[in-house]
Image 1 (tube, rainbow, N blue to C red):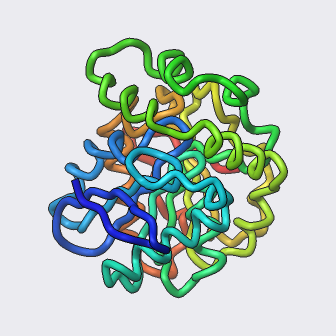
Image 2 (spheres, rainbow, N blue to C red):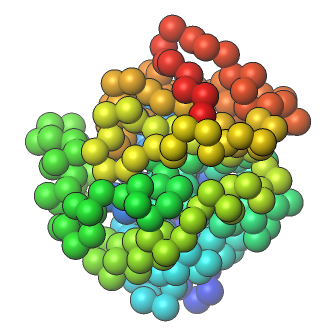
Length: 262
C-alpha cells in the first residue's frame, strides 16, 4: 500500500509498470482496486497509477473535499507530489467527470482522457444510484462472483456522504458543455447493457471536430474494464497510441468492438 500527503490529508494509491504516466480514477462504486487487470495489461508500456478519491477506499474522508472541484484539485496535488508533469487519464463514472474538470482547470497537465460510463447530464444516472447501499448496487451490477469480492470490500469503505455529494453535483451539471470546452481529446466508452448510466443522445457530438468521441461495447454493463476486459484493454491501448492531434474518429472499427458514432 502506497500513500502520500495532499493538503495535509492522506491519499492512497497504487502504481505498476514503467513508461509514460497513466492515471486511473475510480467511480462511485469502488476504489482503485477494479483497475488492476487493466493496469497489468498496460504495465509494459505505461507507468500506471490508480488512486482513491477523497471519501473512498483508504484516502481521507473530509466532507469539505467531496466536491467535483476538490476532487479535481486532488489529482493536481497527486501529480505534483509524484513529479508528474503531464499524463493520460482513465476515469470511470465519477472519475470521468473529475478527470474532465481537471482537464478544464489544468489543460497543460492532461494529454488525453478516456471517460468510461460517464453521465454527461444528471438524467443519465439511474435513480437506483441515489441512496442505494454500494454493496447491494454492486451485487446488482456485478453479481455474486467470488472474483469480485475484493471490489465489494473496497466499496464498503466509501463514505456515503462522498457518494451523495458528488451525485448531487453531477445531477446539477451538464457535462456536455464542459466536454465541448476541453483542449485534450476525450473518448467516451459505454457498456451497451449498462443499467446505471445511459449514453449521450444521438447527434450531441456534432461539430466537435473529432475531439470528443463515443464508443459502445456491446456485451458490457457498467464495468466494461471487467465485463469485456480484453476488448476494453485493446481499445484503451489504441486510444493511448493515437498521435497527438489525431481525430478520435480515426480509431478503427475492429472485430472486438462496434464503434458507435453519435
